[in-house]
Length: 387
Image (cartoon, rainbow, N blue to C red):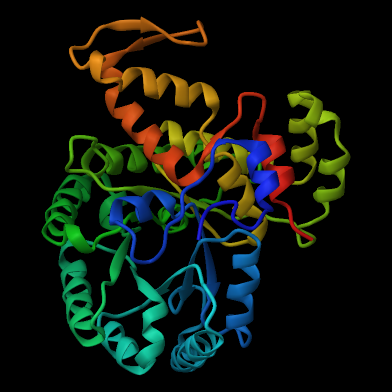
């Protein structure tokens, strides 16, 4: 699979200076962590889940979480597990490519049990999402994953969700983060990414951000994100990919903006008018939050609605200017450091301080591609819309 693989090759050639690479469930963990993009969550109880998975894949989704936890009622767990077994068998029988599929469980015991019950269809499973992860609660989940790997005979990844009150409360945060860091480092080869459960953070104080606010406008949430990145997102080789928080708002008619966007004068470069149109469709807050995610060291995003996927992916494509800067910084002859003027003659590139940024940018360029010099977010968004 590849990002923007659902659009015709000729259209990709028009849009990209460097096209997104191919990847799959067996790719290197570093590549998969960067390629997760907009990870779409779906309740495990959906009766036509297999159809839903393939429908979203055709629209550009490359990672999905099938949820047995907060998205379903406590009384639905047994039926949800049985439904997952049926739906995986259905997908396996069709013999088609599927996105990276993860199951969000409630208890460690579910992990080896589900792998056993999935049988041969377990080959379609990339791993598990581990809720309310702490040092104490996380180890049993990760040990269960190790057991399940032995049972299934294939690699499985964990994506712990950082959402517990211990992380939120100031008096326990440092100890909680230190414990989590110790645990995920021990199981580093199996931890694909860390996910932020901002909805749970807000819940602890009875908060909920409005559609015109981002997670970064809620100061208590911002402080947690900053500390999580500080401890767990370092670029010195000890850090992990940390994904952006969920955006809760959407319109019931998700495709209303498509005709307007395709007719719009934005394609002629009028970015302010684009912003106004997106505001009308409740996307302005999402776009601002995606930009702030990256500025704060996060990559990818949890999504609960299909209309959020394409904006996340379109804003993840590396601009030609970013690519040019990153390549200049990482040229072998620059190994000794120094300062240089950017090829776009609009900024200073300082080789040593900007090296980690450049490496991260080229990784994103590998999986999301590099836009041509005259291609921006609007063109990418419009091209990715499917009928």
